[in-house]
Image (tube, rainbow, N blue to C red; front, side, top):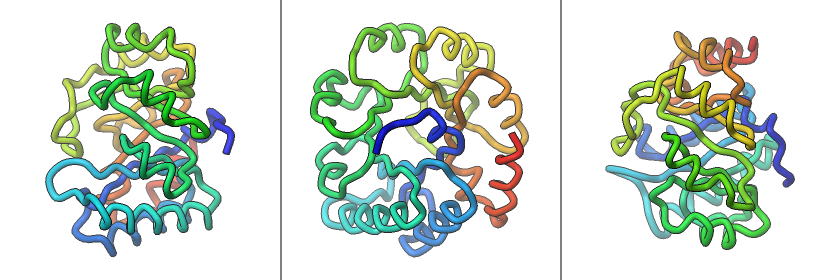
Length: 211
């Protein structure tokens, strides 16, 4: 699948550690797919996350679901798994190994890289093979135990304006601040809890699609 910046519009990230159990993971994902997410990133990290054959099983099911809804499928920081299940893309943080080596190993998939500071942006600015960057955390977030300090809207806008890649904002984004985030030049927003913690996923995505 060829990368297109419109894929970043409504970017949903989820791992089984973000919900109560595996079956709830599938229910939340399928409802989000049904109601309009434009990309899904499978991220198993942190306390309670899966590994090995369990992670592989979930990834295969995610590939089936995203294919059924024609939604691009990205895997976070696991190139081998991404190749096994024929994911469309991969995403890496600044601490997920050598970025240039990761890009080279991701051949055939589109690549996203996280950025939270000017120094991190400059570290990757001349690397070929990157398709998009995730900028944040914009606000404080409880969804990632390893999240860096919030950068705020002003720094988000500054980093977005200098980026030569399409950018997606991430971190602490909810229905109260979504409009302000999307008022910057970002191609979209990436969320976890705004969808995973909602009892009205359809309403959340209907609201999001107004922008």
